[in-house]
Length: 97
Image 1 (cartoon, rainbow, N blue to C red):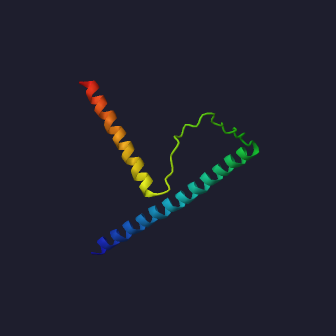
Image 2: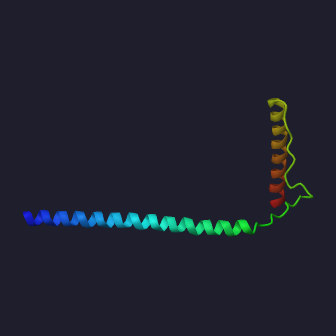
Image 3: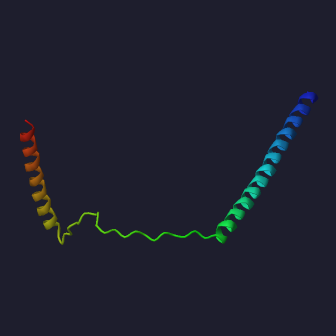
């Protein structure tokens, strides 16, 4: 019985040692990583990158959208567009046959 308790105490001490060692190593690695990044930041601050000027588009690639003042105008325009599409689909089907 006493031997079992000694083993449990030994395993508990070993586990605690591993956990504390890992915590210390992790903290040291984090500090090293921060110092490494600080050196990179100071190097880039000494040599600022030249930002390229934005290119202005000569042709507007976005489609022009029509605004609606009321829901009735929207419904009317939507129905007109639906009928146009139905005619176009019917013409394409006739052409395909």
